[in-house]
Length: 225
View 1: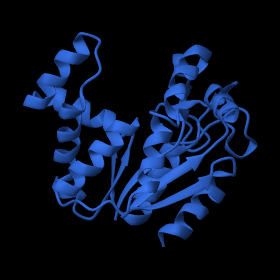
View 2: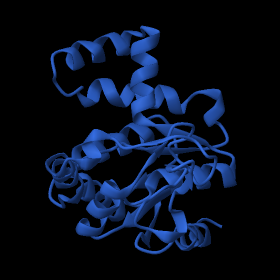
View 3: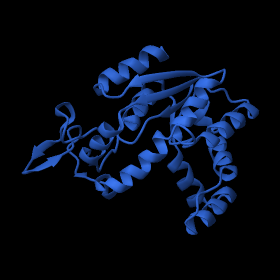
View 4: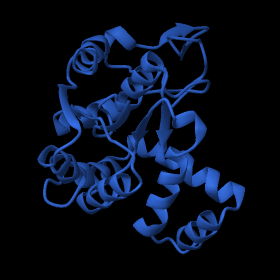
């Protein structure tokens, strides 16, 4: 089972992706981790990517996509994979689809978590990150996943770990820039999702992200089972 997962920042995409990965025992592949592995390991693609990053430029798709394909061909992906964080725009979506086809890798599902932009923003600003596992859901505005208080401070509701906020989670301009890319239906990430809806092959699963974590998960699982 090979899956792409999409959702705006604040939609719970990471949490849902981790639960799907655990349920089906497939590899959860994050694009950022692929970059770090290639750059840290000094691969040829990593060296090329680092040159762009050091200049403050975006890494071109002809470097990024081969790195992703190499990762998807590794042994731990033979049972399946869930790719999170790529593609980010329509061109990348088209290029990735072609590259997968050329490599003989079937894409089975595309999961899209739908969420109103304002709600997504509020979720981002209220979320707290666990020092032990960023996929442990903690949010000051949602009763079901509120952090717990211990010794006068809030700690992770799952494991009791220390909590922090990302600086850009409190920066409305930064949030707006990320969401501008995601919600752009002409060239951005939503355009990529719409592209996958238009082609034969993968089943696209669209779920309402405004529901509870368990309700969203149940909606996804219903379509995957």
